[in-house]
Length: 125
View 1 (cartoon, rainbow, N blue to C red):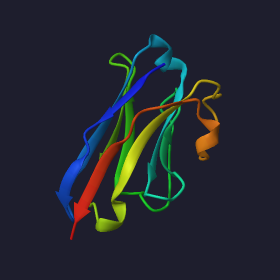
View 2: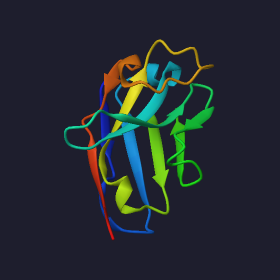
View 3: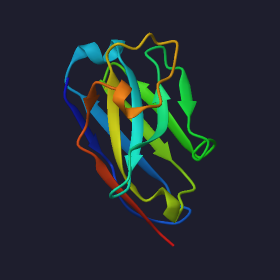
């Protein structure tokens, strides 16, 4: 499956952005999905995950500010990001786990099978 992430940009602290990730195949419906973010020279860090049943799980750093959702009919997963601060400045990636059970959330990047190309989010102070 191919994933296409979009929606990044430059925003002031306190602002909001919504990232989108479009999948190329109907099989998307059976995949657990995740969002990760990465700074230059650093490892990708987990942000949020959503199961095929639309259960959700968040990193502590974004809990209460970010919301992950999915629209299986449109083959898309979203990341609504509110109350952004400069520490949220990263390249954001969406990922798909084809082998997920839908009952356990995966937070390690190596556990995901497919990746989008990344979209830059920059938050100015």
